[in-house]
Image 1 (cartoon, rainbow, N blue to C red):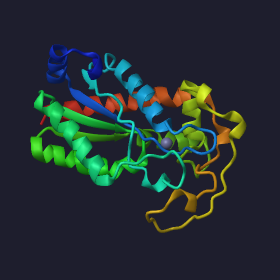
Image 2 (image 1 turned 90 degrees about the vertical axis):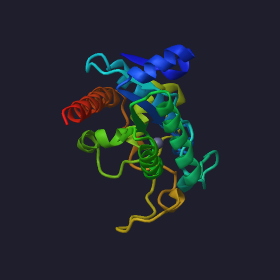
Image 3 (image 1 turned 120 degrees about the horizontal axis):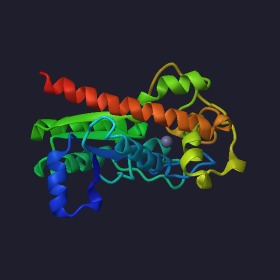
Length: 246
Ligand SMILES: [Zn+2]
């Protein structure tokens, strides 16, 4: 069973939030995704892929409430490309914390961010920790791509990660109208370093993308989405059972 919070009345919302096993916050971004994909890729993926999770809720006997997608994220590393809009790290942490505290005040018991942008991961972890400390409500971070990594690795070659064959495949599956197929080029990698650091994306790649978007396929996306949706639902269910048996 599932509900979308923004489609409910206040009385329906009160009931849904108290009954839900999890309240989900899908998190996207508004940032450059290479020459062939729109700025909304992570937000579009968040919308469609969290919908898949909601639709699978009955199969796993889960009650889920979804908040609307957060369409802005932490994208400073993409700011050298026009159109990217970033929230400051502190703003983002406060924003997510305020959302978590709000749903807790209405009776939510578990709050999970379902994330579609790597730059959000660290501030989300901090925000979710702050929500737990302040409210006692259990909080979780589900980074969608972490549940998909081995399947993408098996299918393609190393180097994917942004505006690549993975993200392009998912866009071809849900929103082919937004993919500029004639603009797909393989990016040149300008910097490969063994040391991690904060880097702007134009220091790493010429197009803003990674991997080989020319390998993208909607058929691959379809298989990936089915399997990853199941993995995430199974993890949510197993977590619930583990917590209940303690
Ligand atoms: Zn992306």
